[in-house]
Image (tube, one colour):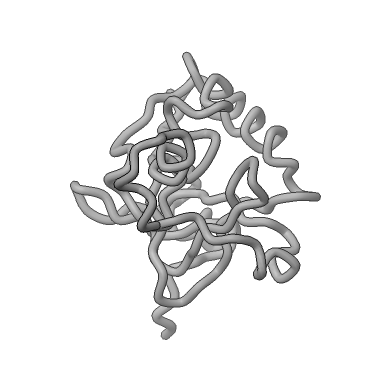
Length: 159
C-alpha cells in the first residue's frame, strides 16, 4: 500500500464510483481572478484561500501560476463545485481554458478543507520539469501573491 495522495483519473473513478469531483483551483480560476467567469452560473466556490493541497508548489511565468509536484510543500486555493446538471459544461470550459491535454493535465489529489479532506481535480502542467526554475509564488498562494504585486504598501517590501 502506498502513502500517495495522488490518484490517476482511472483510480479516482473506480474509487469514487464515478462521483463527479470538485476542482481545486489555485490561480486565475479563483474567485475575483481573471478567468473566474468560466465557471460562473455553472458552479460555486468554497473555502477560497482556506483549502490547500500537500505536495505542490506554485511558480509563475508572470501572468499565471503553475502547480509543480513538490513533496513537502503546500499550496492554497479554492474548491470549485459544479452544479450537477452543469458539471460536464463546467469541466469542459475549464479543460479548454487550461489546454487539456496539451498544456495541462487534470489529475486527482486530496484537498484539505476546514471541513476535512476531499478528493478533487487539480490542473498540473504537462511538462512541469521545464518550469522548475520559474519564480516562486510567494507563500504558494496566488491571490496573496497578486495582492502583493499590486500594492505600494511598504510592509510587502520584506518579501
